[in-house]
Image (cartoon, rainbow, N blue to C red; front, side):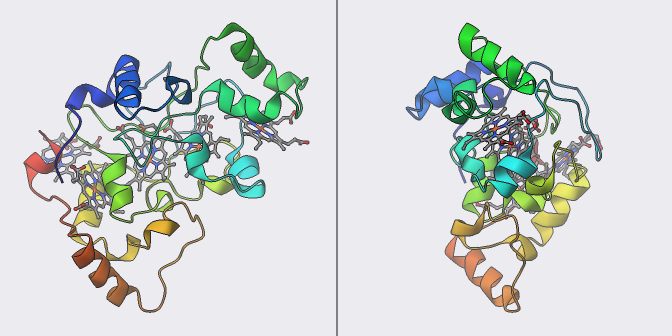
Length: 215
Ligand code: HEC
Ligand code: HEC
Ligand code: HEC
Ligand code: HEC
Ligand code: HEC
């Protein structure tokens, strides 16, 4: 697959805006991270400025991941939602709750929320969400059961060995494209057969050569 975005596209908040503009999406749908750690690992679970729960919103309320992470299928980066997305509901629901004070403040001041970033690969390695989702790899394969987490935690090492392990044999991760955000998906009994068909139909070739991930 051709690389549509230059490397800097996942490095600056400004570039995030450029990606948004390129797809004609409202800039309001995107927010930038304030704090980006240099290095993160399995178990990393920073405290967020608002106790937002995926278990409640994506699990119990059943909101689709893409309702909030709107750019995930379109660009290398999975955006975090702008405050307006939360305000769709929270201008009514629990509007006076003290734990939502920072959201209310962000909404009235226009200052974006400063969520703390959890997952990060180093800048010298290239990763693109859209390529993986178009291949039929689901969020759960790389992020685990996010829909059961009150606080997001990293469950995979995001190491080179981890990337390569799947690239060498992605079969158990490939599913129908309508199921990429289905967090309960499990490979069915005829998975080998399905995976062979998906690989052919989608012309998949996960890179194993150095330049595939290090440009
Ligand atoms: C109602 C909005 C909303 C929905 C729906 C939602 N998320 Fe999120 N997500 C957020 C917000 C806000 C953050 C940043 C705060 C945090 O990490 O909890 C976030 C953070 C994340 C992160 C961590 C990002 C990082 O910094 O590395 C992942 C991974 C993630 N979401 C995956 C998912 C998946 C998978 C789904 C669907 C099962 C989903 N989200 C549904 C709002 C949402
Ligand atoms: C589709 C509607 C909807 C959206 C969108 C939504 N929420 Fe919620 N949220 C709810 C509902 C419903 C509750 C549960 C209210 C209750 O407990 O009565 C809730 C509860 C919460 C709570 C707990 C409030 C408390 O006082 O216990 C927080 C914090 C929260 N949401 C943050 C967010 C954030 C941050 C966003 C945006 C990333 C967001 N929500 C987007 C519907 C939504
Ligand atoms: C093939 C593995 C893989 C899949 C599938 C995947 N992610 Fe990610 N995700 C990652 C990696 C790796 C990072 C860190 C990326 C970086 O640092 O550039 C990440 C980062 C994120 C972030 C933080 C913002 C960003 O883009 O860096 C969010 C939010 C997120 N993922 C949400 C999702 C959602 C929602 C889905 C499903 C619709 C999903 N991811 C599917 C591997 C994956
Ligand atoms: C769970 C399986 C899985 C994991 C984990 C995974 N990948 Fe992939 N990756 C794939 C598949 C399948 C493709 C093939 C896509 C195609 O050929 O269209 C792919 C393609 C790619 C491509 C080529 C497409 C593009 O974006 O230019 C790159 C680069 C890439 N992966 C980087 C990574 C990196 C870096 C990691 C680890 C941080 C990673 N992948 C982790 C399954 C995975
Ligand atoms: C599928 C994607 C992928 C391929 C292919 C790949 N790498 Fe990496 N590489 C990564 C990622 C992701 C990291 C960052 C790992 C981390 O943060 O722990 C990395 C890290 C590195 C590092 C930093 C040192 C270290 O081990 O952390 C070196 C050096 C390196 N790769 C060299 C190579 C060489 C040489 C090849 C070809 C033989 C190669 N890579 C192929 C994804 C890839």
